Image (cartoon, rainbow, N blue to C red; front, top):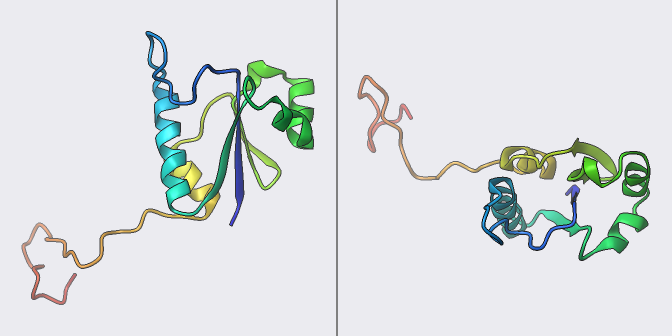
Length: 124
């Protein structure tokens, strides 16, 4: 499974709900990362304020910081390759990076507009 690392600017918290203004992108990425971790994905977030060592030990991140600086964060790296800069990837993008896909609910049947599909029908 791919190793996903998200390198963030200095933040007081990772949830986005600290302070007066809620940062919706942080709320969404926090939920997405937790969901992927529950699915078994190898995904981690590194905050410049609380985990500065992570920014110096990874060559890709160190080079990025040297050229662009913290203004280019967040930076998303998958297996050592930069895949996103300047904004957080969506949940769908993170699922794709991890090689995971939303799994449809099993045991449910869909009803078409014509009404041909039901629990006893083999058409669905």
